[in-house]
Image (cartoon, rainbow, N blue to C red; front, side, top):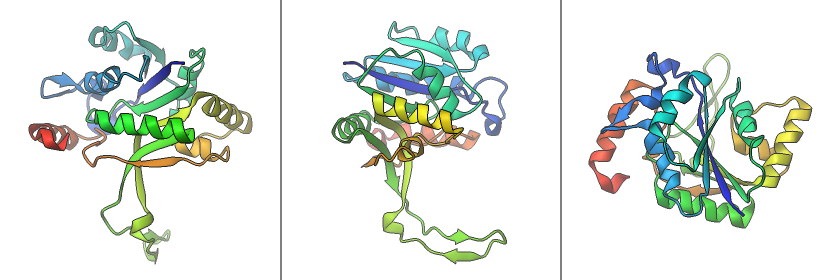
Length: 225
């Protein structure tokens, strides 16, 4: 059975303060979108890539992404709805691989390790342990508690799931009127445990202009990517 990567690229990029999609911005000569999508096209376990985008961005995106394994669907009002739009055009596959288009520095080894973990556990997500001490605060800004840092894991993407598991979890959420901002939450709500895979701190999400500068600096040192 095939594995399908769903690249979420339908955000409006408000914090980037750019008229066009932030995924069209270039990092060392290549667009954010090109780097994100090709990271998965270069993985032998990935058979097709579905890019979820705003309708107005699809012409520009399709000019960049000419590989025949890439197709496009229009995004929804929320992240979960965007993934479900992609889900609706997938006939069948073994794994659904969900990745933020705004994470262009994902390493091949981290994709492969997460795919392997998903095959073994039906659900897996890459991420990193937090470096800073995290405080829980009340509505007035006062510290309530300090969680044990060794148990805190910052989840990134890709998040990878058994296709049938994800489909059933998505249908369950739809029937209950639930909408999650994280795909792991979706399957967790369906009583599925998610295996974490330790990835790389360089797998940053491009959100503000500073992130473009950071990504360019990271790429200058190939050992970091």
